[in-house]
Image (cartoon, rainbow, N blue to C red):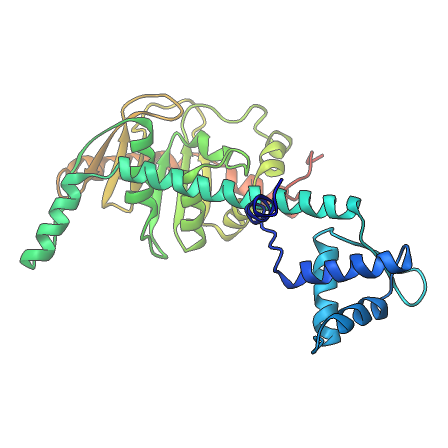
Length: 327
């Protein structure tokens, strides 16, 4: 491997040979060769001072050493005074592996964001965009229209764009057949779940109604797995009353939808857990359907079992996310 290739590969994992910490690491290695083992801060400082016409401050060198330790490039022996530092091929390998892992995580996050951007572009509604452009150019408020949504990704994008984005405190999102909402675990959360939780943080109230079947057991113990797998944001939403969960006593057939206030709704066309077909309906286009859906929801809601109250009781009894049982 050439020095040029080495520099390129190091930069890919977030390590730069010109970085101050790496320069101090070099001074440590050179001082270590002279002492045949562990070295003290004074020996490191003396090495740097001998190589430079103007040595950096001791505080600056301490900071570099601290960064090297936190990134696993060196080890520190704190038994006795002064402390002794060690830099070997093993510690440097550990530091490189740590940097590689951290950089990989950053790139994975960036790839996920790019993937979501691609999905958003592919699901962009040209009619909506054209209406907005026309409205801007002729000076009138553009009117979006209802329509049919095809494709699982497009349905998810519409849910985020129409029902999660630009919500305000006091807004209410009604959700029927909300079993999937009970799977808001960090491992399974996708863009929609993330957008829902962010909207809840910003003041949106979600009323989720399960209409098919209560969790098996229906008691505190049966909800242990839910509490053990959910994030703190879900628990906080339940405690704040912005994430409300209820279930009908018996399986009930009704609209399968998400409805924001009484303004617009997404009506699912299939019973699949993640539907690939839905209708976006604005109140202006069909006020009767929106009003009927909301009225039906509220009627079922009033007679439904309050799961949120059960969960609040469980939380008050000392259960926290990450516990295995409520018993």
